[in-house]
Structures are given as C-alpha cells and as structure tokens.
Image (cartoon, rainbow, N blue to C red; front, side, top):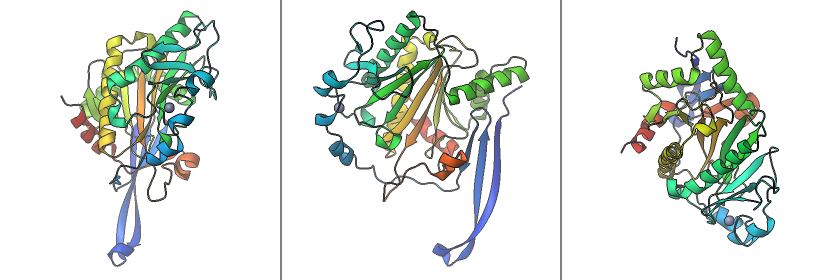
Length: 345
Ligand SMILES: [Zn+2]
C-alpha cells in the first residue's frame, strides 16, 4: 500500500469586482490537508511576487557590528560558555565558527552556532563553504552529548535567518536543541510514521512518501544521492515550503561527512533560488533522532519568510496563529518546477 494522506477540497466564492465594473467574479479556494504533518493550507488562486528585493540597510543600521554580541569584542565578553564537563574550553570551535549556550534559551539544551566572525552574510553568499564550519560545530556538539551518555533521543538544527523569520540578530547563526523529548511537530510526524506502519504491515512512511512523490512528479524537485528534495503538499508558510529527506538515515549519527556536503550543496541551491526571487529571509529546521528511530528519518524543512509591503505587514496572521491553517499564495507544484532549474547541473 502507498501513502494516501493528502487531501484537497475546492470551494467557490463570488463577489462583484470593483476593478472590472463590478462584474461578478468567481474565486476558487483550495484547502489542502496533510495527514503526516497535520498541516492544513489554503492555496489561493493568485500569485504574489515581490517585485523588488527588500532594503536591508535598515536592519544593518539598527543592528550594527559595534552593538553585536556575536562580533568582537563583545563576543569574547558577553557570550555564555559551557560548564567544563561539556567542554573545558567553554565553546566549540571549527574554523571561524563557534558554538555556545544560548543566553536566552528555549530549552534546557539550546545552543547558538555563529557561522563566522562576519556580521552579515547575504543569502547568495551562503555557499557550502560558508556554512560548513557552523554545521560541523553542531555535529561536534551532538557527538559530545552522545559521548556523555545523557540519553538524549532527539535533536534539531534550526535557523531564523534575518528579522522577518524571527532572527533577533542579523549576524548569521544556527540554533540547536537536544533532549529526551521531541518537539510537538517532531512528535506529530513520528506518530504519523508509527500509525502508517501499524496500518500498512510495517511499511515505512518516509520510504513510501518519497516513492509516491517521485512517481507523481508534481512536487519532487531532485534526488541528489542520499537526499530527496521536495516541495510540501501543504506548506507551513505563506511562500511555500521546501523539504529534504535523508534516505534510510534513522539517526543523526548515521550522517557522514559526504552527507553533510550534499545537504549544504542543496541548501545553497535553495538559497540561490530565494535570492533570485527577492527573498531575504527564511526559517530552516533539520529534525533527527539521536538514538536510532525508524519512524523518524533525518529530514528538514525550509520556509521562505517576508514582510508584505508597503507597511511591513507580517506574513503570519489570524489564520495561521489562531485557526492553525496556512494561507499560501504560492502553488507548491509551481514552486517545484522553479526550484528544479536550480538543482540541474
Ligand atoms: Zn555581528
């Protein structure tokens, strides 16, 4: 059996259109439900594109290097250190990247990893080489946690890039979380994979989902080796969602150096697409078990983020915050076709 958990419903509405002499206009609203993620998204029948790249100078003015806790000399003075049992030097270090505890943590184990000493790195400069030390330092940290036998089962590497995505500082940085319990969303997808296995004679949801999406050819961007890249059927963001799945990788510690190079190469392609399409901001999360779990293949999601002109309106509203439904003017199948061009060659 194959996964059948994507549902679509189309409803129609009417109004008298002031831009066409108040003629009657029919509108179509497509509501999509994804049983794996529990996400409901309304794909709207029109497409909004940002015609201009937002001006980032205001962010740079409000958040200068001189006030930045991740730039020298404040970095050495006011960033937290680990207790010596974790690492005697206080911080994890690779190349120009550093990992240290978050001073304002969301979790008992919430760290920050700065990409480098560079205060601002533009989306088109997020190359695999630029990102590698920060991902390496996250790996070093997770390996150290495993070595200490805390028994942590779940981890994630997360990114709020720039203020529209919730980035509190423009200095580029990742955040990691590790612990005994999955986050709410990770729990949801684990439950989905468990339920699928129970209903389908032990079949693996992730294997079947990727095969189904590849066959359908509507949202399957590319297979790059160990990874498959897709656009989400029901995106978690107003500008769509890009997903990646590591095949058969059931633990963070299954990932090899080559796997990370492949991941960073793919991320750079996605960021190149975003840059070319006038985005300046995104959220990314990579979800992984720290103790092998066949119900959670290592996987991740990227959602582009933006402010809506002319007054900097948020891309979140009551629908997403209070009704748990996403308004998305980007058609996932169109987004897929556009991204495929960036994965060629
Ligand atoms: Zn800085």
